Length: 284
Image (tube, rainbow, N blue to C red; front, side, top):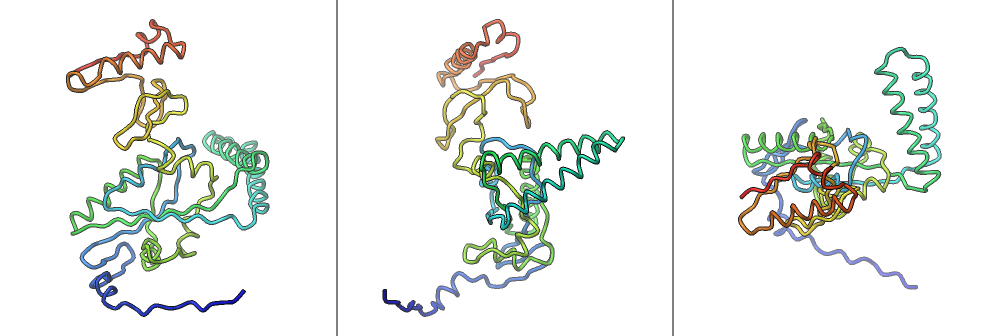
C-alpha cells in the first residue's frame, strides 16, 4: 500500500484576523477575551444519586458553554483494589467510632464503594474519568456577574459544586475552545470516576427532565421530549403530590385531570385513595 504525504494548506491570515479576539488577558479568577469577560469553572462535587436526564440543565445555561472530557481508567484492577482498601478503612471507622455522624458517613461510603465493585465485576459496567469545564461569558461587568450568579444557582440546584482553576486560566481557555484539545492539568483536578451508565442516563438525549422512573406517559414538552410522571415521587423541589392544572378555556385541563386519575386507577390507586392523597384543581 503506497503512502501519501499529507498536503498542508497555507495559513489563511484573513480568516485568522477575522476570528481572533482583539486582545486576551488571562487572570487567576477570570479572563478578558476581546469585548467579553469570561470565567472558567470545573465541577468537583456530584450528587450521591442521579435521575434520568440529570445533566440536561447544563446545556440550557445561557451565555455558558460546557466542555466534557471522558478518559478511560488506565488500570481498572488497581482501581478496584484501591476501593477495597477504602472499604476496609471505612469498616474500621464504622466499628470503632462513637461519633454517629462519622458512623453514618462511613456506612454510606461502604455501600457506595461496594456498588462500584459490583457494577464492574458482576454487571460489567465500564467506569471512566469524567471532567466538566464551564465557561461563562458577560458583555460587561454587571452582565458578567449576573451570568456567573445564574450558573452558580443552577448548578447548586443540580447538586453539583464548582471551583475555579486558579493559575490554569490559559489551559482552561484552550480546553473550552472548539479548536483545541484537553489538558491533563485540568482533567487531573476535575476528574470524577463515574459509570458510563450514569453518564448516559444524564446526557440531554436520554430524555426529558420530567421522566420519573416509575412514571406513566403524560405527553411531550416544547422540545418534543417525553414526559412521564409519577405523582408520588419525592425529590428535589417536589415535596408533595399536589397538582395544579392551568390553561386557557378549551386547552385540555379536564382531559389531563381525567388522564391522571385514569392512570392512577390503572396503578391500583382507587378513587378514594386519589381523593385523600391528591387534589387536582383546574383553573382558567
